[in-house]
Length: 154
Image 1: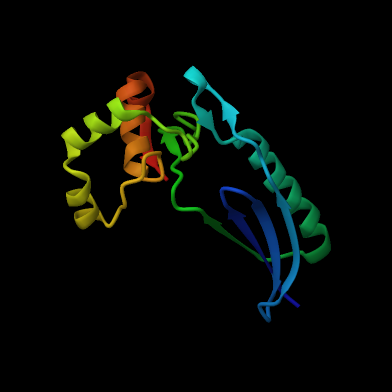
Image 2: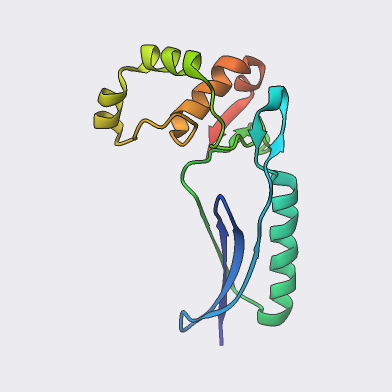
């Protein structure tokens, strides 16, 4: 029988799941990770420990199932900034951060009223960084030295 590994990175739980070729769930490993505080109390995802845990779980499960495929899925509200060498250009900001009223005013002054943005982008106006554009703009405005090193957002 063939097996497939699924890496599911959600906000609350990080999971590695094994499915059979009949698409039956065979085994699940999951772990929760607390956010970490970085610059100026900003919350970030604990990427180093998440990556270590995922690789350890994959290795352990491979010994049992010799899966032939790995698929990755993630929650859609978090972005990762990548530099030209493929590394992190900035820590992965938790979407639970609240940047404050002053930031929101500047964001909407720059990009348009919340209603217009929602109509044009189908992105609801939330006060924290659930709107990924806000977290990207936040890095650009608050951390210009990091902004210059960003090649991709995932």
